[in-house]
Image (tube, rainbow, N blue to C red):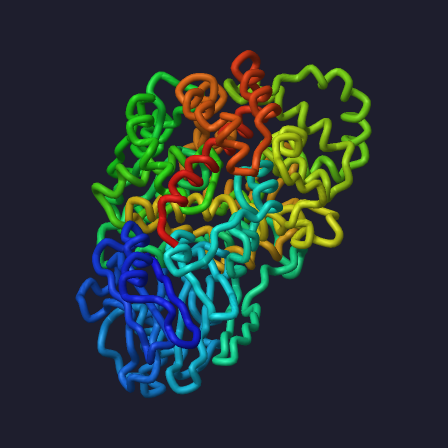
Length: 623
């Protein structure tokens, strides 16, 4: 795992100082080595390396081909690189290193961009041909690794993060539609970016850029259209899924540095840790919890699961004091505003884990692939006319439901209230409503330039939403890359920790997407395929405990420890000068939250806070 940055155009408009500053902004992504090259005064390629495979300096980047014609910078891992290396050697490739980077370089030289279809891994890369003066940018199938791009009359700029683009002269003006959606959903849906004229390269896409300044994009991978495509019984499907997941974990154990695993005690992380322990033994596992907050703490069940699996386990218990001693470092990690509050947990977990290991396995992605969220049960129910009619009839009784996430009982009442409202909407509108964290009215009335059209991701929703698989397909296209994987990448790379996600091996995803909805959820039972496939591998407690999100006491914090931070940005002179938010409605929402609170209000204020902390930091960067 690393960071890349680059520019291609006519006559470099930068000096080495700007290149070096851009690369320095990525040092947390790769502390082991940093370097850049300026090729023919036309192409700048920079790389910041976190050494995982072949730790020797010979595998540093930017990497040049043996013949000197080709260059590559690459962020990610190719897990099947050994098999690909053997095949390429038979085609005449001569290797100077034992790295996966050189395998990707040689594969692109010998087979062209079609080689990417053979790579099993996660990545973002730039590949330059000095003869044709063309560059290829590529991103992995599911969007696990990020790649920001900016096209203008003077060339193409790209980076693993936003900040280096400002160093390279990209003007940082706010995309108002993206700001609207960020405040509503807590993240910026891809391909949008909060900075105007910057976009994220879509997952499974290659961008081809020519010397004439022409940019074309090609999809080399599309998520399988959901629906039964192969004929298997439920038991056969569960066995096949288990085999694919076990193989995916095995591939992701490959490293020349220590590998461990996150373990919350939930189904997903327990499956991954169980497989890793069986394959290698003595695996180190880690969980995080909150001191004195039982509703938000999972360390007890994680410890019991670790004992059953036989892993070497460590619980990382966070006090409020420890969290807020690190909060400025947390905000420093936001190169683009991201307000999923569980990122705080992930940030501190990764920071602690990095003291022991360099690579961690994670259960991320299982919910979006196998149907694990409460909303998935609700979405499946929403397709049933009986449930829609029932909830419509009792909706008046639910309008007094709790708006709090502060306890299990209050959270259930809140979810039931939102369920009833969503049932009265069209299927697409229902999906968007249940995806939102903030109240749309709060967002629209506080912005100088409110956007009230359909969310940008409407185009990514299936044309017809007829079953659970359609909703999962939408999650994989929208929430997975924009929220879950963004969180994992930004928070882990802030501590130079590589996190690998076996459930998002494309073979696992393709198989799951080819299976009927009923194999995933039936009645109130979620992730049926995983429960069936791994029932003999895990303690029964893992399967019996209710779904528990990786949450923080955000409602309390926006009234207490975050209150002063939020209020310092709700100043009329400051907001008028910034030109994005309206003072009066913001002040009203803030004061209302101090008195009453609620999940939607606290989510909105936290999103506002994260944006302003980012704004303060990004404006310190020279551009």
